[in-house]
Length: 292
Image (cartoon, rainbow, N blue to C red; front, side):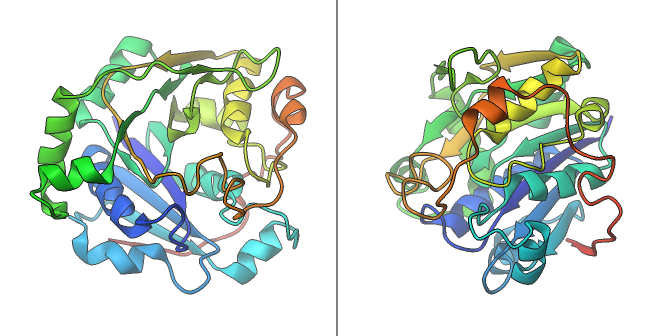
């Protein structure tokens, strides 16, 4: 069984300490999954990956796609209000090209569970469900304290073992709007995991939703509309590296990175089956990538 993970980000230091958060996240992902696809979307200068690759424990399973600003602008129809790091398009590019039997859509600041724990998720929950795993929080102070006041990237696995033992479940349920039975948990998009046939059936994330917010809930509703199950789970431990007050509010709206949100009723209440074409993920476009 082959497992893939798709991560989308942008080299803009969103939330602060982005390079450091990304290093912990990608090291844990490289260790857990057979294939990790990083899509760098609309970075103003160069890909975030080039700044951190010397601190990554690379083993030939990291695929690197770059969508530069000119291409990003074209793919979002030159809409100035489009999400700066357009998650629906970036994620679909990665999901469409992923080779895994199971594909994870996740974020750049997550410390991932162990391989055996992810395999347990599959074994327990079956292959006809989209699964979202509730995150737990860890702060920079906790990370530095564990490392003796420093950031020791090479010891990311020892950090994970320690915080897994010394953390509690985070059971935070959420509804976006009245009638929403699809969000399930707060921040469901940190870990959305489904077999490839479900992602293919729903045609990934809804590509019309190029603004901030509600896209993760939308994907979960699409899975249900296509006849699949939807489950929220709270084990195994999976950690979000807290980046403080800057950036809270969701989608970069609170700190002004993004100016416009998707309509929550269009994204959640009025979504039925997918409206994406068969070419979702720009599957008719050849996009070069490099492997690390």
